[in-house]
Image (cartoon, rainbow, N blue to C red; front, side, top):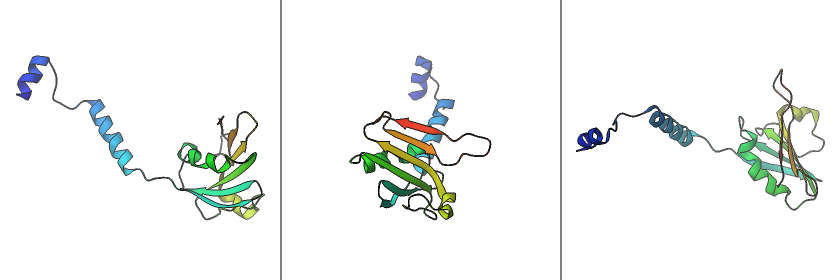
Length: 133
């Protein structure tokens, strides 16, 4: 019946490239590990947090912004992995190796949220992300 219907409608029963791509994306999504965003502590207006190594800003930023929502100013030093994570401000030299991003929140400024890469990969300028929320 399916074969007759596919011949009648001119449809192919063979999987397409798009079908394979969707299946691969579904597998990747199922295999993806959730990104940890863990608070370490607070010193004055500065917070310390760490994320799962390999995480991208987009993976954790929505969890970080609410930490600052009640503050006029807030800074979150985000470390890659827990090994060097600290809430000390300024970040001690011994901990700087793990510092990946600095999120700055200013309630009365535009944009409210600026994330700067603490150190760039060799041969590249540090990146900056901005959000107005």
